[in-house]
Image (cartoon, rainbow, N blue to C red; front, side, top):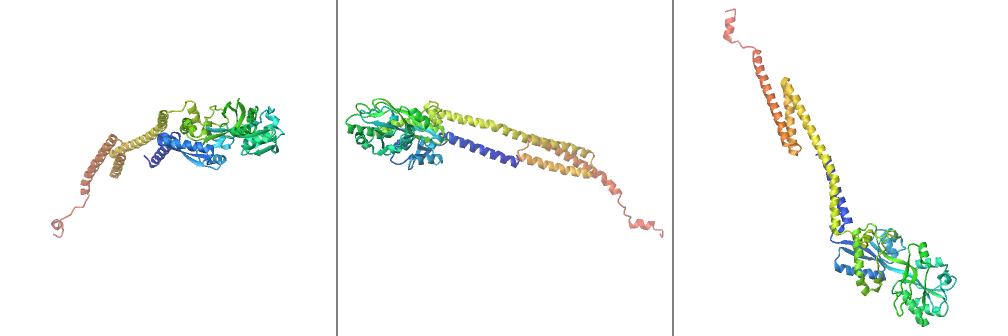
Amino acid sequence: MKPFLKIVAIVGTLFAGIGAGAYTLTRYPSLVSARYTVTLATGPVGSDGQKVLAAFIRDLSAEHPLIRLVPIPTDNLSESGEALTEGRVDLAVVRSDDEAAANGRTIFVLRQDGVAVLLPPQSKIENVSELAGKKVAMAKGVDPGLLRAFSAFYGLREADLIEMPAAEFGPALKAKRVIAALATGPLGPGLIPDAFAGIRKSFKAKPSYLDIAEADAIVARVPAYKAIEIKQGTYGGTPSEPDEAIHTFAVRTLLVSRASLPDRVAGEITRLLLTTKAKLVATLPAAGQMEAPETERSALLPVHPGTLAYLNGEQESLLDQTVNVYWLAVMVCAIFAPLVGWIASRRRLRRSHEEGAKLRRVVELVQVIKTGTAEQLAAADAEFEGMTEWLFERLAAGEIERDHFQFIERIIAQARASIESRLGKEAAIEAPSKAASKPRLVSSTQTDTLDPAS
């Protein structure tokens, strides 16, 4: 094989091996490594989401799964989204209205923060639109995105929103400094039921929630939010609170991955979150808000295909993935085998052409042996000697079959024997003629006899 073809074959094989290895490592990491490490931006330390994920990671490490999560705390959820967008982490906790949620792939819903409008007992307000132009209490730390969408839809002026601690809602409503109170928080234990309890304590009577009937219209304006229901009895109590389902809208806190995260890894994380949720709720009530994402493929925020496959029962088993890898290897071989065969056939064709050319030259030299002069015979013998060296080089390199070598070598040997025989005959014929042409030497006795003076 020529050096160029050897280099091409080696480089091609090397790249094919690297490509197959990279594909297997990224798509099927469990076949290559015992564990797959994933970095996770958890949000600020001490937040409910960070606590839940810290407990999840702790329980996860005790089970020694294929996935190992490495937490990376951030100052806020916006920074987590930036870390994911810039590729510094594999997973991040982000809000649904963050750009990172649209660019990434949703794996799990960690919590939902909704809007609640609280009214004092015996309030005559029946629709949120009646709040426009009136003073409304607003809890400190209210979600700015939800507040902005709520105020813009119902025309609430910033000057009419009075910020205060949720614990002061009851006295402010009782003194009629405000006609309603606005709070945002998780759909579970948290700010909303605490504010409700504070109002009830001030009035010694049960307040009520105002239904946000236009929640779907608000979500149509801001698709990153979701229209939801606070189901009857969500906040517990006797009697249960609320006493009927309430329509509202919420921003979701999501566990989002980079789009290139392997399907198998995303599906495994989803499975682990679902299986450990019950254990986490026992110590962290906030974990009860965790839920799997919607499986509709038309959702605004794309769900990771690996998560969808697991939730729909379509996730490939390890055996299926192994078979896929084997089939991939077969396909690669099917592609490269014809190329290798073509190269080999070209080499054989080239060698056969060289062998044919040598044989044709032998035939020409045989004619020279029959009729050539001594000089031509000597040149032919030298050429046969070069052919013999060529044969031995090809045999040593494995580029000629042994029977072909023996066949050509035998013909060359016979031809060189014929040349030697012809040269011998030529030498025998020329010897007498050379002897006859030499001058005869005359002895002194004969010279004296022939001398006239004698």
